[in-house]
Structures are given as C-alpha cells and as structure tokens.
Image (cartoon, one colour):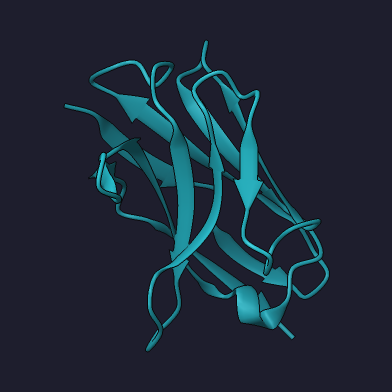
Length: 119
C-alpha cells in the first residue's frame, strides 16, 4: 500500500506561483510513475503532468505546458508540481496518483489540495 499526501495548495493571485508536493508513505515511490490531476467544481478530472520513475521522462497537458513543471526527489519519496503564471481557471483541487494500471488509471490517489487563484 502507498499513501499519498498532497501539500502546498492555497490562495494566490493571478500571475503568481505555487509549488505542490506529493509525499508518499508506506512504500517507496521510486519504482513508480507519478501523475498530477486536478478537478474544478462541476468539471471532470483533468490530467496535468506525469513523470516516470527516474524523472528522465515527463509529459504535460497542453493547458499547462510551459507553465507547470513536474519533478521528483526519490530520496525524499516526493514528487513536486511547480506552477507558474497561474490563472483564475487553474482554480481546482489538485491530486497526485501513482502505480499506473495496465488498462489505464492509477491504483493509488491522494486526497488533494485546494488551489485558488484570484483574478
């Protein structure tokens, strides 16, 4: 079992930055790919970014490419999401997930952290 806990959310003005962290316990994260998602009220969950086990490969949704950066520190069992140039439409609950399933989806999810961007 892996427990994931997100932190770093909060209220920020448009144009500002936040860095989210996804900390794992119960098992090391270093063997797993990790992804970040978000869900705004009334909207479906949206994929944002993913990183492979070593950090050598990343991919991003078009909506955040160039503004968000995913990274990981396997020694700290933590994955980060650096978010710059935040917009009001980035307001959502941000969650991390790990241990991809062969058919899609992830086996383990955190509960999320709220990010609110004021315009």
